[in-house]
Image (cartoon, rainbow, N blue to C red):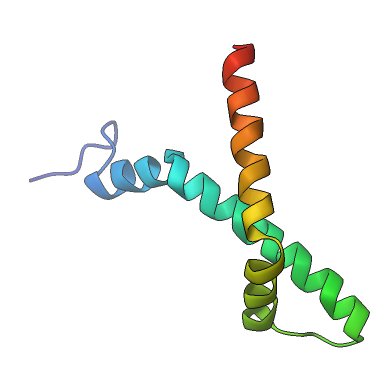
Length: 81
């Protein structure tokens, strides 16, 4: 079996599928919010609080409101289309 440079490999297809998936995009958006929260809370503390602490704190304090807002924005975008 020879590689055809014009045809993407199965791994490239799968990788592209994952990158285009809604689930992966939501994961990246949530991760960005956690990193932003980590930065803000680390600045307040005067030291790096670490990802795990930021993650748990963000989940407890902000996740449900963030998800609700994302859902509302998605519905608004859908209805505007």
